[in-house]
Amino acid sequence: MNKFVGKITVAEALIWVILALVLCFTVLPILFMLVASVMDAKQILAMPFRWIPSREYFTTSDRTWLTNFHKAIFGNNNNPVFLRNIANSLIVASTVAVTTVILSALCGYGLAKFNFRGKNAIFMSIMATMMIPFEAIMIPLYIVTANLHMMNSYRGLIVPFLVTAFGVFQMRQYLLTFPAEFIDAARVDGLGEFRIFLSIVFPNCLPVISTLAILSFRNQWDNLLWPLLVSQSETMKTIPLYLSKFAEEKQTDEGAMMACALIASIPMFILFGALSKYFLGGAAVFESRKG
Image (cartoon, rainbow, N blue to C red):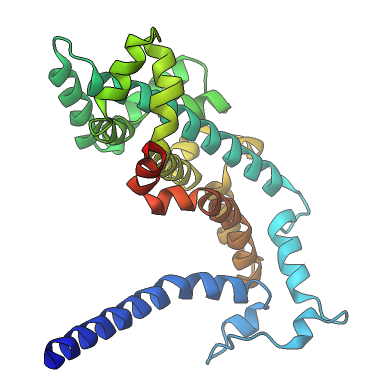
C-alpha cells in the first residue's frame, strides 16, 4: 500500500512539474512584454536580459516608460490615431461577439430542440462551410462587399462575421444536453417559443455563451487579413493594422513596440477576467443553476 501511495505521489509531483513548465512558457512572453514596455531599446537588446527594471526608469529624471507609452499612443508624428484604432477594434469585436452569440444560440436551439424535415441536412451544410478556408472565399466576399458599398466602413468589417458555423455547432451541441422537461413544462404553462428561449434556455447557457463570446471577440480583435482589404483610411483601421504599420516604421524602437502591444492586450485580459468564472466553470455553472 505504501509503495502504491509513493507511486501516486511521484506521479502527482511529475504532473505539477509539467504544469509549472507549461505555465512558465505561457507567462514568460507576457512578462517579457510587461517588463520591456518600460525599458529603452538598448536595455531590451542587452544580454543577459534584466528582468527587474532599475529604479531609474521610474524616477523623475528618466521617464523611459512614459516615453514608450507616449510613442505607442501618438506614434512618431504625434497623431493619436491609435486611440481611434482601439475604438474601431472594440466596436467591431464587441458587435461580432454579441451577434455571434445571439444568432448562434437561436440557430443552435432550433437545430437541437425542434424536429423538422431536412434538419440534419441543414446542420451538415453548415458544418461543411467550416471545411472551406477563409482565403478561398476572401475574393468573392471582397467583391460582394465592394458592390454593396460597404468598403471602409463598420458594416464592411462586421457584416461578413455576424455568425459563424463554429458558433452554431457549439451552441447546438450544448443545447442537445439541455433538459427537454423544462421546455415542455414551459409550453404547458403557455409560454411561447421565443419567451422560452429568452427566459429559460438562454440564461442557462452562460458557460457556452461566455466561451463563444471570448473566442469570437478574440478572433476579431486579432483579425488582420480582412481589415487590411476593407479599411483604406487610417481612421478605419484596427489594432492589428496599426501594430503592423508601427513595427515597420524605421524610427520605432522596441520599447515603444512592447508598450503598444501591452495596451492592445488589455481588453482581452479584461474580457477574460470578467467571464473567466463561466469560461472555466463549464457545465458546473449549469448544474448549480438547475439545482
